[in-house]
Image (cartoon, rainbow, N blue to C red; front, side, top):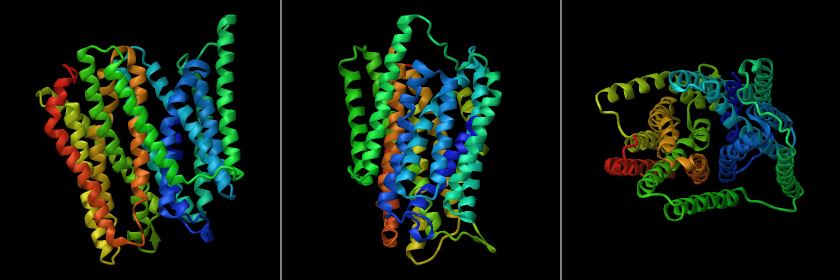
Length: 475
């Protein structure tokens, strides 16, 4: 339930953030051009995943998962409250930063507690994570409906206020019911002087980093440091890519891995590239496709205008409806030794993503002719993207834990999150290339995304059996 409310706030904000940033100042928005707005959107979504790494470290070393969730929820509540205050951009962006820090604390550690509740593992843990996954998608569904409706009826700030109220409910619910968790997620305070001193040193480092962040934020707010969001996004993508290339090079040359382990690292590299490409296309949902829903989709049903942000909801609904069917399909195929390998499933995910953008090429062609399109175009595209997600997303984390050298599992999991971060950042940069004033170019732009996805998926499908052989028996 706590995760449900947190996802309510995340997907609720995802549904209205880009629309708020590009809306005219006269009607409550910031009036940014699409390129800057989508870059900010990409940086925001990327940062929420990047902060999961220090958030997990803080819980492991200093806070414990339960306290990390409480602090994370409190920060998300505070950040959304700042977003709801009708002030200028400075306070708004500080609110975004606070939300990012909160998500980084809450998201990885609430998942870790689910695993700790079932130390016996097996089917019981799978069932627990199924309930947890249900909470994620229910929260995404209702957040994608409620927040855009509030924003449309009562103004943008009411939408952000709704997200704050949701997180307040989630925090209260967690505080009232966490006694059911027992010792899961608790960290005993150290009593030995050496351990106490180590904690103090680590807290000093954390406070120093937070102080540096506060100083830089203040300088930006005061105008001493000027940042172009597009340039920041591009250099962040370069930095993530550099770290990734450097780390894979280290693994393959200097990490002391044997031949089998190095071959498995190459499989992770193939999956990493596929994952980044997939999320770069999939996350158009919150940026370019969200703007498409607002500007070029006929959203009138009688006298009621469907909020553009509501088109974020079908993805969560599709997951709830079709995840059991896909699970049953993999089990059915597995009994007949026909279950596709991880590389093949990743290839199917990319192919389905590409087909979704083929649908958008058709929709954009209608728009280029001067007409609005019906909602069915977006609904079909999102359905195909959802099928792609179900082929790719659940397989990724499991595959990395199996393929990673045992002594490097933690590092490889951190590396895996970089694939999602890189994809989200690229999604924002790609969305910035769309020009609402040049609708004639829109079919070609969607076609490029479709072709990259389809060609990548087809290539990976062709080499899937060879890639799988590198895994050395790991499926």
